[in-house]
Amino acid sequence: MAETMSIVITGANRGIGLALVQHFATKPPAVPLAIYACARNPSGIPAIQAAQGVTIHPTPLDVSSSKSIKELSSKLQSTHSSGVDVVVNNAGVNYTGSHSIEKGKFAVAVNSDGMMEMTRAFGPLMRRPGLNELGGQSRIVNLSSNACSMKPGPFGSYSPQLKEAFANAKTIQDYESLRDAYVKAIETDRDNEEADGWPKHNSYKVTKALVNVLTRVTAADPQIGKGILIESCCPGWVNTDMGGMMGPAPKTPEQGAMVPAALATSDLKGVSGEYWTLPSRLLAKIGADKIRQRPLTTNFAPALE
Image (cartoon, rainbow, N blue to C red; front, side):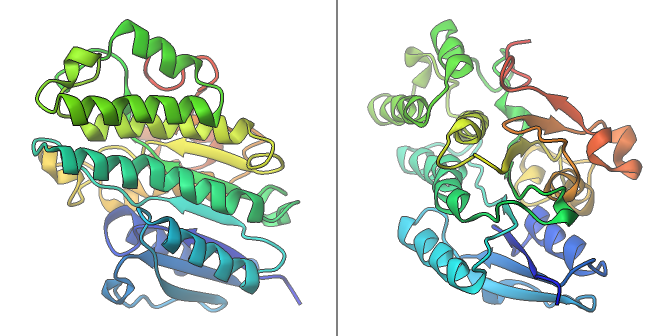
């Protein structure tokens, strides 16, 4: 009997997360597939007609809560004794244009620390070696954004010292130092983080830059990343509740889901710890070999170009 593949998707009640559930659930799988569609209120996840061989499990999860993450990881460790196959860290918040200390700290808790805690909890639980259907390598995919760029722009800029610190981060402790420095900046100078070298009033931009750092450092961590792949990616500008805050976005949630879906299941030739994005002209021909790769090891994001 074929082993069941397991896919965990956070923020699965709407937008890209829901589109990812639909993407995986409606295609006949090569092996039995269990999808854990995670959200703080899983009862709000719409019913989906799954293909034969696919089971969808609406699952409660609050990524800002270490307790909730631990409960989920313990449950899946018991249910899937051979290991989890794919985790897509999609849950996120965006408070661009609506700033407060509380919102800034919550953005850190969800967008970056939530992904870090999910990666730390699930990294050791991933199936090793991975299923043949995944090229023998289980993987964690973190949703980032081109907003992570370190280049000066309309949404603020970083000091040279912070740019260097982001580019040179190599350990989880380096990630924590950057996160702590940002939290301190918004706590002590809520109206002018720029005084400490951070983009002003843009927790989304900063937390997505932190996502790329945590992707790189966890991929290199022997307790977390050894034997699996950990990637981050930009889905593009997508017409979701979050993406629509900036105006009419050109991509549908289904199109936005194509990049993380490809990274979740394609043969990535062992590449790990990288940031990926996708030229819109290639949307119709999705595949890992079609996705533009930007190495975090040298550039960390579209940041220091």
